[in-house]
Length: 337
Ligand SMILES: [Zn+2]
Ligand SMILES: [Zn+2]
Image 1 (tube, rainbow, N blue to C red):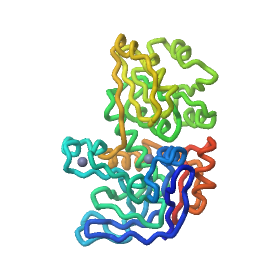
Image 2 (cartoon, helix red, strand yellow):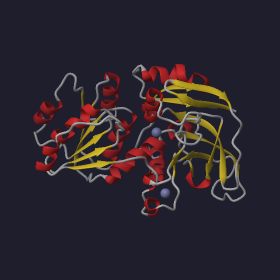
Image 3 (cartoon, rainbow, N blue to C red):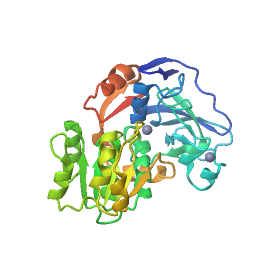
């Protein structure tokens, strides 16, 4: 089969690999569509994935074969697969925090993923797609589960105001998810004009480019208290550094974006204003609700998918333009149709 293999920094090759063998508790899935994740792009830039691993974790496909112990899906079922593989035995798994598992494996990061004709997964992380969902829309289940985890960890309640830093796929999904969860005012900041436009189209009350407008001045004009919550989806130190001074007193900062650099932030304000800062990593238990939200149209995946490319073009049509800072939001690889 064809597979996109991570070789190192700015080095991904599409090569022939054997089709994975389906063990007694496994499901072999023929991949249809798979999205390029921000983490995949970060790994392309920095080289931080396992060399030799088949990348890709935001995928949908059709069950091809099941092991003899598998009971929940049958060949022909349309499915998605959870990218987080937790051991189920460690203290974090037992506390219901699988993304903190001591032996965490991640599809397309530490074990072979879905930019390939076939992927093999244990039955427990394979979910049937609701009938109304397309393969393409279903690639957004993984990032949406991520976002829904952040929303459920947060203190967001009906009537709250929210500032979202960053309008990439995660920020734009957060915009829709917080509206769905009852936020009344949602402001979005972003430096890319195309992404700002998309934030407006998806219902942001204001889309602010911090290169043109001071976010602080904007918030003052809006009443001055600041938002009840900030969701930081940018993955850059610049926004994280200012979050404590933007959120209102007793407000909450939820960090969804992954930023490997250390950040200098105003912890004086964190103390004086009694702020809460929360991190959120991956979705797991949120998979079924992400499938539901997309199937019911409460979250719209279609406008976020900006390019569809073939597996052979994953570097020239996907990673290279994304790395150059193209206007793309989500690039989806059509592995087979
Ligand atoms: Zn991802
Ligand atoms: Zn565990």
